[in-house]
Image (tube, rainbow, N blue to C red; front, side):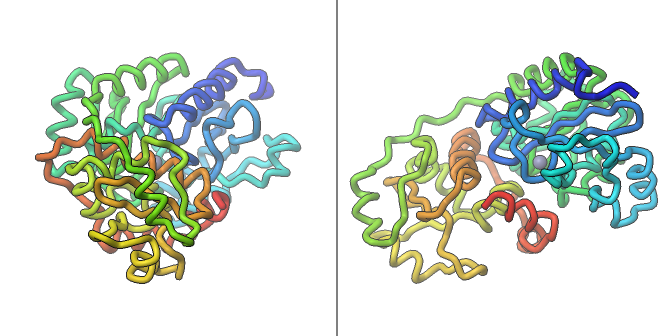
Length: 353
Ligand SMILES: [Zn+2]
């Protein structure tokens, strides 16, 4: 068996992963994942790693595809622990040392027959996929594609089962309700072209939000240690009235919940950071990772990391693309809960710290 690292398609997949991972409108933080099937092995992005690092550090894990598919067909919970099926003999020293675990979404890649699968959290697709009329909206925009719509379910085995039911062998574009986009193809070049065509077709105008009032935000910070977000784009969700209303309604997609907690914390009129924190302790005892101050902008907790910063920006990028008149489908209380109390996601949260 040839060494996968010399394989041109594998190299191209790493290049595509790095490219997509560096585009905040397609992938944020450790979100999204890519895979390639070769000689019975599914090479899949590791949980908690960042696609944008694909060319500089080990991010792929080899999984024995047949064994994984077998437990998936049995509907066995083991399928959610793809680390049980890692083909360690395929790993080089660096990969072994990194002790990588396959992505939470490994089964989604395994269930699709195509050689190459790319899953991204494209903000334009998410902006459509969080609407109550998301299925119709997506079908209008993507009528030229072999597309399947899959309503929100928890990522992992449940999602791969829903995908299997919603697709046939011709389906190569899948929109995941309240989540994102999957494309599949027989080569990396084809997958890349398809991804670009779908994202372009899904593109919607983003409203221009008024500028943030960073002076006012600095004053509200007091001695709390809260800080301005790393990206100026992150403020928009608090400065655009429609976006603020949408964000205030609850959680829109899983990675928001994983990185920033359930929903969004919005300051009331006249409240400082200390006031908000006194009123709003998170279940983990921490203060909110981010606080939205209407018409002023966003403040991040002092210890907010790169992943939280990326997801704070994502919220603005998504909400600005949702029409003010749209009716929104939020994750339910139990869907929030299952994400926050899922061992696999706790592992990913830990890697992010
Ligand atoms: Zn995802």
